[in-house]
Image (cartoon, rainbow over all chains, first blue to last red):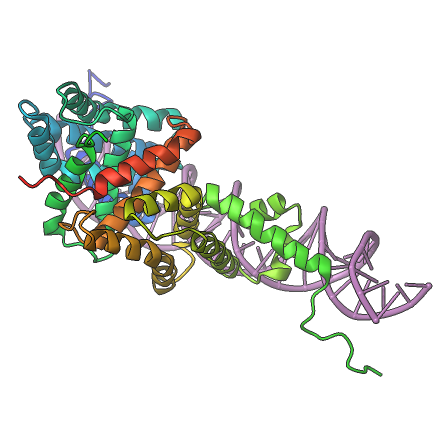
Length: 197
Length: 197
DNA sequence: CCTAAGTCAAACATGGGTGTTTGAGTTGTA
DNA sequence: TACAACTCAAACACCCATGTTTGACTTAGG
């Protein structure tokens, strides 16, 4: 006769560890190749495919969890960056401390493009962008960033630059060590107000 | 008794027209969605799937033909642009007259990423970029464009900006009519030499 | 007008990814 | 120790895209 018994929600320790492994593996795989297979991810995690389905009922469900985790982790990293002071220096700090991260998130979100609803994509995309947006907006207010373009456009270009840097590295045309400086220079050049006339 | 007869290489007029339809349809479909199906393309062309396979033996073969055609068409358009004079103005002309085109080509090449060999991709990618590269290089030589970054990086960013503009339009955040000016401003800002210090 | 060329729908074979079931073997934990 | 939770390989059903075959049909063009 079951008295209390183990809570039905409790998971065994090794199972929880495996869930972590799966998420890590998925982040790795999807971060590199948006089309990574459930089998690929299971293999990367060193587990069987069935075990994977034991923890995540479907591909979209797994991807959703992955995206959530990446964003959570990203928010955590970004929140530790000091965004006060000169917006240009703040942006430099932000990029230096997170550009790889942001790009990976982008890659994974792109991977999720086929699996999640557009609404969910937009939501996931918007939330972490808020931080950058606030910073850019402040720079605009202080007259340090150009104001002749929509801020949404500036953010989009910034993201594209990060993405482009990753692609250049992947193709061997850019040294990863050079990337952060190059990105910062490019972005600051982009945000710099044009000399009138 | 067959005397000369119709040359075995000759194709009937309607067949040739259909090949055109297929290429047009493929450009449209792949330009929008890299994963477009052979069935999708056939439908877009108003033809049967079998007819499509009658003209192109496989998906890679079709995509290769599509890419070739897009590049050919692109070269034709770009070659009509006057690239002399102030590099900034020349670049403005180039972007205004071809940005949609260039982005579509990029999208299609991205679509081909899975079907064609990396070597072929690089070849297809490099050839049309030469024109832009020459222009940017001239601008650098004349001291009008920044020289503190690799030209390959500048080109990569330029491409990313075009791609980003297309994405912004697709998501409804950017009015297509505003795009060319915005792109030009952004690119010129990017290429503008930073005030030393 | 006749014929070869071309088109098409339907049906098939194939391959690959998803998701499920089974049944036997491990391992955490009480 | 003993039981429940967990894992796993193998095999399955399913879907979807690619590519092929067939056989009847339309049509271009001599």
